[in-house]
Length: 202
Image (cartoon, rainbow, N blue to C red; front, side, top):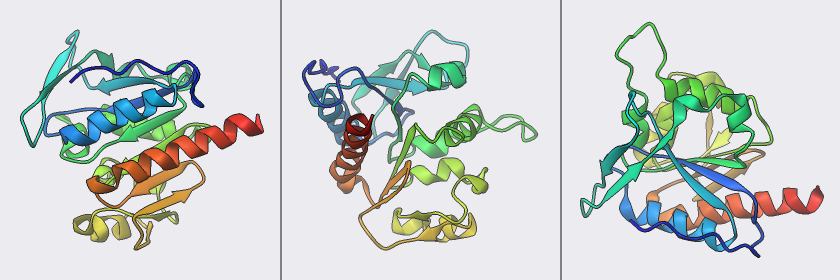
């Protein structure tokens, strides 16, 4: 999958958008985010748990396309997170794979990452389709907040204490959620508009 070059004159010029990755991602969704955020000027950074490797190559769900990721989510302390303007958890099996932990007494690194991210109101958190599975081990992050998600996940988000809203896109401050992978254009637009509004306000 080709990397898009950021448009230096776009509304998001100088901003960085992180996208979490694992195998069984939806190729069209990831391609759309990379292209759309770059069109608006943002640098797109792919992130995963590297398990001590310098890079990992993941395979998509639909066409078996591959993408190589060098960004290590375990290196994202508060300082590194502050360099991101938005963090996107995509559809497919990405969130389910990233919430795996081999030691049940220790949270998965991606869950710890979410805990740090939700302590940073200036960082937009965006979840597509099944993405909210990643915070099922940290339900306090979305408790009491309006969200949308795939129909298969409605019971899960209600058990997390979130308020399921039957809409294609829900924006609640720094939290953006979309219902299905087909709504990825809405999620991207929501993130872009939020970042643009914040830039104007600043």
